[in-house]
Length: 169
Image 1 (tube, rainbow, N blue to C red):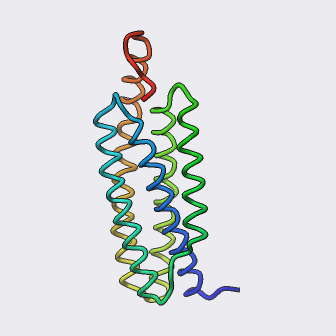
Image 2 (image 1 turned 180 degrees about the horizontal axis):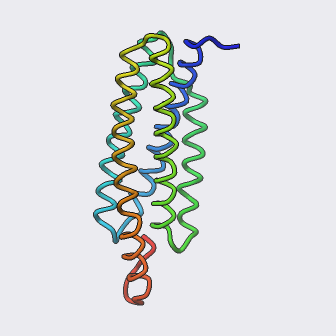
């Protein structure tokens, strides 16, 4: 049975790998978006935020005397690479990408709520504060996605109905 401190470290490593996975997914998606500049800009901005979040998590892990898990980071990047490639084979990639991004944000939100509770349980206020900051950023991105799913879908459908317009990306 793991102690609360050990579990916190494990979950911090998981979160670090999760952010590395998000980085790969967002980078792949952003590189293929051509006809939705507002979506591309938001994803690229969140990509920068994601890189900063991974760095903040690494700092928390190192401050607690640990190191990141290379295996978890590589496994997460491999999964993300596969997810990124899957978008190439669907005709509605922008919609599938938006759905996947929204779902991933919800998983991240849950992970950071758990990390905050665990950090508070072991008295690590600094990690709790870092995770609370990241949580707010993830909630903001999830909110943006939620507010933009319907308008994006409508734009996609208009573009798809017009033979001269590319809708997929």
